Amino acid sequence: MQLRYLKRAGARSFVWPPVGSRDGLRDTAKLRLEGVLTNVLRIGDRLSVTIRFEGRDHVALLDAWKPPPTTDEVEAALRTGVNQTVQTVGLVDTQQGHSAPTPLTPARPTPVPPTPDDHGY
Image 1 (cartoon, rainbow, N blue to C red):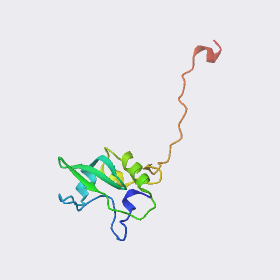
Image 2: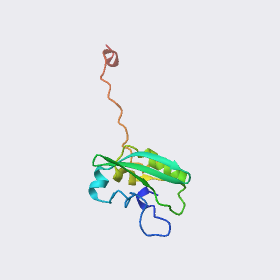
Image 3: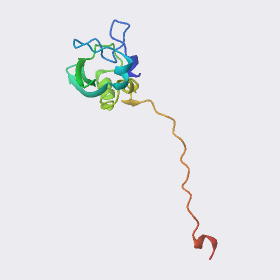
């Protein structure tokens, strides 16, 4: 499950991004595009995150959610998102701790120029 789909326990709203903190962090397009996750800290069974936005660090506790995923899985997912935008972190998969895999393009063999020996000279 991607972080952006993780719902608060007993609520219809989402855990990510952590908005509504006492310092006025609000979920806006600008926050999602320009806010950067800079730190993740575990405090018992809770997770604290620091988001740098508009030159300030905003610290927030993530609201509780009904597992799955576990706190360990969410922590691992968040840690892979450090130094990424809020929007990018929302795409991180909590079960693998990384973004959903992108299809790989088959690698083409690197052409090797012929040498004189290749032509029998």
